[in-house]
Length: 360
Image (cartoon, rainbow, N blue to C red; front, side, top):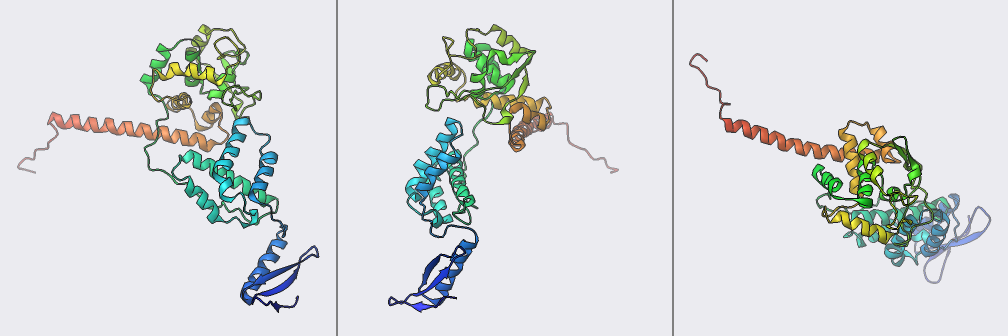
């Protein structure tokens, strides 16, 4: 072991030889602190870390985005970049990757604790994947995001699906492309981007096949990349007679079932114009509510969980189970109201009292 020496400033130092033969000097204000510094250095060396690596978070984030996120769809890649630029960069961008601790990540999450749970999850996901890739590249021993959680809000859950009355209102009042769009959501459970990517050639023999998706990475023009978000999204869905009838009345002036008004590929502005006709009928509606309403129909029709997962295009069955659980909870709440109403009606009849006889 190298000789222990004491410096003029009172600190202790020792020269440590690493596995590759290089030498590094460690320091400590006490012998115990020096020993801890030695142990930490040797542990990092055994883990295969580059001991002299001073890569900053900002430098690694650029490499991570360009290397690990380059193949993602535009909207997903933009989510990671926006999360990092808005919530992470200023907080830890100029800190060495190896010096980031859980407390740094916790401070980042505290800074956005008043934001939506969805936004918080995106920020935490960005941090977690950023540092997990650093760990896999032997830059750090552990991920500082492990154990960090979002701040949940005690707010009433947002409405996820449409009532039967709202569905009937849409289907009876809308016409043209708006009707076709809503019908594909309600009767086939397609995501917005899947409806917009559906072509007439994808529909035959009372079935439709989900082959592509149209997204808007620049908030207007459609992304040339029309690939689906996952392998599970590629699926074949039965077309019920109600949907078939609506499709038979739809104008066929394009390859796409729901194109722009002039038959060209739809833009985001064109979609917003189409959707404005829907929002006039149902306040607060968003496109995903159509899909959730389809999931509700599957649940009430007795479709099993595995089949529902396939029809909804979920890559993880836990997502389907969560949807089914939410629907079941809604039905239980409705049943409770019916039970209360029933017992109330029985009391009002006044014939439920038991009269005892003298012989009892």
